[in-house]
Every structure is written in structure tokens, then in C-alpha cells.
Length: 215
Image (cartoon, rainbow, N blue to C red; front, side, top):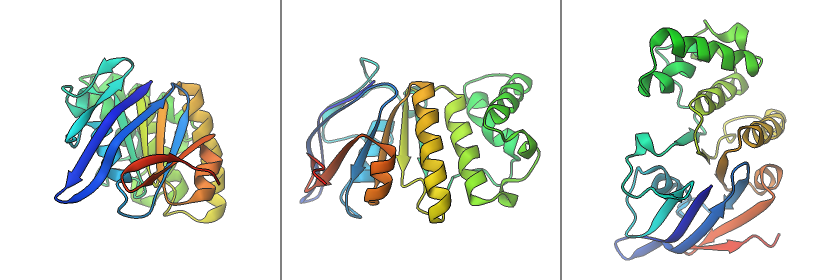
């Protein structure tokens, strides 16, 4: 479970977040809509520990995460540009997070192969990521995110670089995987259709405040 309490963030005279409260249950995806520059990505950075807010608290599974470094918070981030490592093949991309956690290379790769098989991507294991289609790259990115068993998944416009047909397929697949893994997920997007497809609960970030999406 993810809980935000009274988060505040300003850049100079511009208020980006003003007393933001949010709860996201395990297995739930909450979508946050907002215009470009509204503070959506800033909110994700604060949750992940990549940015310290001016005020407020972040709780993950009931623990105050404000003094926990990013690598120990149990958050996984996914971006629209996939953020895969071009110098690594697919299996080593997926294994990377496990290696960072201190798992041995052989065991990490074994677990990565098993995760790829679960996703129906076993045949891609030895390939270089730049040879994959956009949809394949995003599936590999999701496998890499989930293999570390994160508590929170943060999605920053994850499908905006893909064509419409592929977006619709991946939205459902991602939602199913998130529910199966029991992860609290936050999706930030400017795409209303994407928000409706991915989340039952949708909010708007307007002038620094989270408001219910009444559409």
C-alpha cells in the first residue's frame, strides 16, 4: 500500500504540489491526469525518493519512507522511452535489478529467464534490446520492473511512444500483471482514454491539488 500525506512542493513562487493526500491499495492502479508541467512527474519522483518534498510524508506498506534511500524503497519506475540498457541483452536487462540487490549472476539470470518465460518472451532472451519492437521493449521493461517484487510501480506516460492498437493491448496486459503481483501502481498521463482503461480511480492534478476526475 502507498500513502501520501500532505505533500507540498514549490519551485520558487510556483506551487507544484499543495497538501497532496493519496492512498493506493495493493493491486490497485490509480491514474493521475494533468497537463504537461502540472507536477505529475514531480509527484512520482517524490514517491520514488528521487526528490525531497518541501513538506509531507510518504508511507509504503505502513512504513515512513522519507528517510529510506531510493534503492531500498521498493519502488519501480517505468517511462515512455522504456529506459532499457542498450549495451545489455534482454535477459541481462531483466536480471539487472536482482544484481543490484546483491543476487549472484547465475541465480539472477535464471530468475530472469523464468520471468521472460512467464511473459511469453523466452525467445527474446539473447537479443539486443534495440532489435525489439516497441511493444516487446515495453514488455521487457515491465518484466524488469516486476522481477524485483516492488511494493509500488510508478508509470510515467508508459505507452505514449506506441501506436494506438499496441497501446490498447498493453494497457490490459499491464493491468492484469499489476493485479496478479499485488502492487500499488500510480499511472501519470495526459491521455484520458489511457487513464480510463488502466484505472478505476482517476484524479486530476490541477494547480497543485489532486481533484476527483468527474469525466
